[in-house]
Amino acid sequence: MASDSRVLDLPEMKALSHPLRAQLLNELATHGPATATTLADRVGESSGSTSYHLRQLEKHGFIEEVEGRGNGRERWWRRTPATLYSGGSDGPQSPAALAAARLVASGSNDHAEQMIREFIARDERSLGPWRDAATLSTIVMRLTPAELQELTEATLELMTAFRRRRDPDADEADTGRVFVRFAAVPVLDDDTKGSR
Image 1 (cartoon, rainbow, N blue to C red):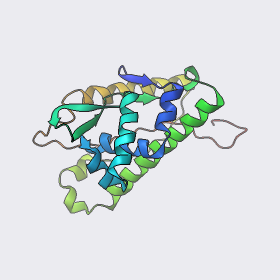
Image 2: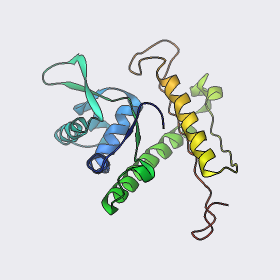
Image 3: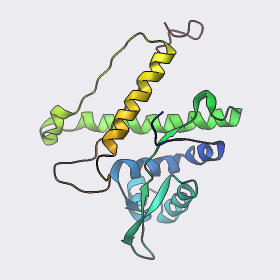
Image 4: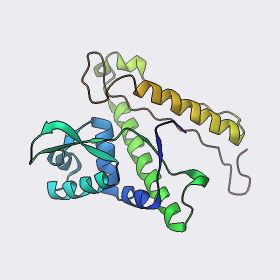
């Protein structure tokens, strides 16, 4: 697990399992700081609704107010920098916790798939240097569960090191927001065989 990973407890998973909250968190992670009004326009909700759900995300420490930006009526929000993790077998194991973890993972996967679809749909000429820098790769390999865990932890550490190189909200020359998706799961042939 990356050093800035955050293992979610049941109340946090329940908070994130709400579809609009997950969508707001993903918007902030993907596009950077925004106000409730801006987010309301992006997700097709009222600013009152987005304000309420942003406060719930803040209550659980998923987002924070951007200091020095906005005014008393206009609050700017950003995602707190942490990798969220359900805890696996070390996390909450109640049926409610497992159901909440599935909802959170499903919402995260839906967002990731949408980001990939948007990239694929772009006119290749409009991507400029990002066209050759980006990749959609798949590698299938044979690993033990311990090796898979080692690969996951090493990859997350590398991504965390790159994320720490600069302020994610700074608009620096020659930089852009980059969506990174790393998926490493066993290939299950069927429910009885397990991983083959």
